[in-house]
Length: 152
Image (cartoon, rainbow, N blue to C red):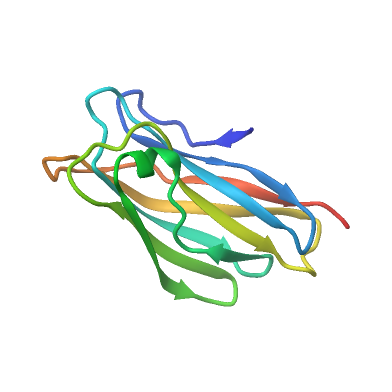
């Protein structure tokens, strides 16, 4: 699996997003993974995700990844803005003071438009924040990945 992440400081929390490839009309999956240094694992996460509406449609809003499930978390996403170009939603991963382990915290399932043109489309995660058990908020770097559409 390929990963995309902007350069991150070695001591900071970060998110990684998997890449996806599919044909028009198919479903694709993007995995959101958390990487935290030992002893700095957050108990909650928040991020905005931006999806281009001309080629991709979210299928489900709240799919927990294994690292979030085993930490007893809940994932809630809500539409923040929808334009002709982008679908933006804010997501909150929360619940209790249990720290979130490194690994897949969320899964985004998308459907490629039946008339999507071949090419690449960026999924962006902006304004991510990690919240430690003591409620200290730690901003993280924005990340992005690519969904590649292959011809039929």
